[in-house]
Length: 98
Image 1 (tube, rainbow, N blue to C red):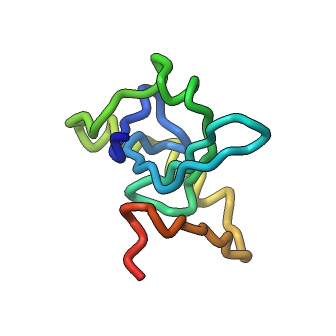
Image 2 (tube, one colour):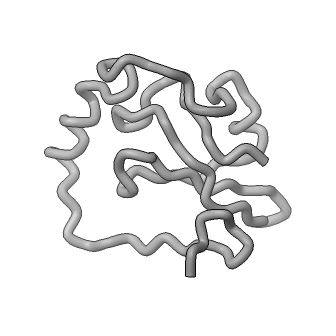
């Protein structure tokens, strides 16, 4: 499975993500994606969503204003979070370095 993905539309202002984990929830394959710029921006999506026209495999070469939009700055200033959300990585993940 490809680990690098580009969202066709900004997600909280960012477009480049990596696939950290694959899990099964209620019989559906779920993928944990995290932004390469900001780990606070992470999401769970289904295989169908990942294979839709919303995502492109690999990192697409984009200009800085296309890959980090004004929406990101607004998101960071309006969503100051005091609690750190723990991201758990499976032992077989390529990103598990322990």
